Image 1: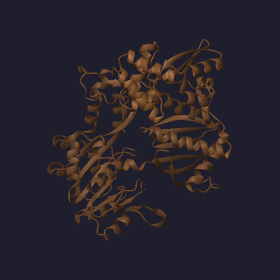
Image 2: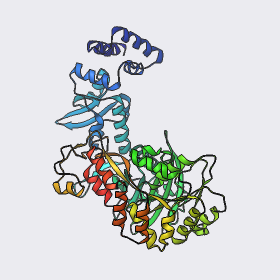
Image 3: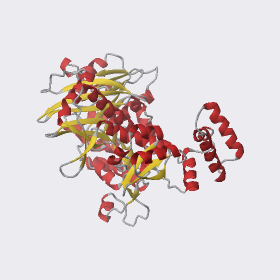
Image 4: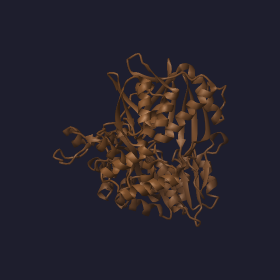
Length: 550
């Protein structure tokens, strides 16, 4: 092993990456800390992991691969045992003409390479990759195959399947689903029974993606395990149930909200992952542009009135409101909330949850809150007339009330309130601002590619056909799990009523008339903000069209 380390050191010296003196220091560091030479060089800050592997690639004439940009075929993993792969940091990539191509980080580990060649009885072709990339791929692909194996579907499509019938297997499978969902940032896990199998889907960046299919006979064990964790009735499968539990893996602790729903094929189960850290995101990290963020900061420090956040389900309204409350929270104010349900616990804020069976509704809670000397109130949703009327009363008596409303844009919020029978004078005298928002997926920075939208599509978005910049579209790679997108950002519009808009609302003008006045008053629409993201290369034309129409 010492000789191998000297070989690595000499290769780096020959390439001009380190000096003789630096090699001696690294060898001493290696001995003192009982680590490999490569890791010592990285720990000392002499070279990065990628620089070492790329140097080996250049000097040894072996190709280098950014492994996270490559999709490994599941079948090829059967050729190398998981234990061997983990111990020797070897990742199988593809098999052609009795030749197996593998990714390795240490081409000087001749013993392991020879052992593998003898075991497989085939020719090995080597590709270099970083150790961290290999570890990540081993974790991703082998973890999946540990419980789920590939079989050929009726249509020729590759369907990942396995029978999970024993209690221990169900525990391991559920843990795998949870760990994987946490790792990839999924917000929901869907376990859906079908006539002949069970589909497992994750919602990632707002879009459902199918990950696995398990045998129909596995459904009972999976659902029972989840019900036990959630303190739900295992024997009851004819009625919907709700539950909740906490889960901790090596890195993270999350809360999960569980819902079961009877279908003709059995119980469908959805797990919502609630990561406490999402409720503590700073406003500027949500996607606010500088001008809109400045407007919003002024709005949330208004002494009284109603401030609404609008958008469809899953558009990030709760996260925005929680981040807002964290900004204005201080020892001098009493902040109280009524939510359905409480998604994240907020420090030093008095949170309450709706319980319809006990008669604890939004309106009942709001009525009681007003006797609790609140300064700031959060009402989860403007759901009915009694709740809205009490919110208006609170605003008129000096309280600042935050709430959400399900409308497609800011201007529609006024129409929604009027359609529910609220007096237009009360609406205009209390509503201080409406923030409309959406969540858009961001293009994967590793694989996005130039696209050519049609002239008709460009015109529909208000982009000139003569636009000379580059517009990008999704491609798909291992890094983004072949979706073409990685991460999400909010886009926002803030409507601040002025005298003209107030008169317009009182006269029950159309939504478009209200919006035109707001734009004249300086409002940047959701569409305009979305187009800025497209032009800057952060998202695609297709994504903006998908989101804005919802």
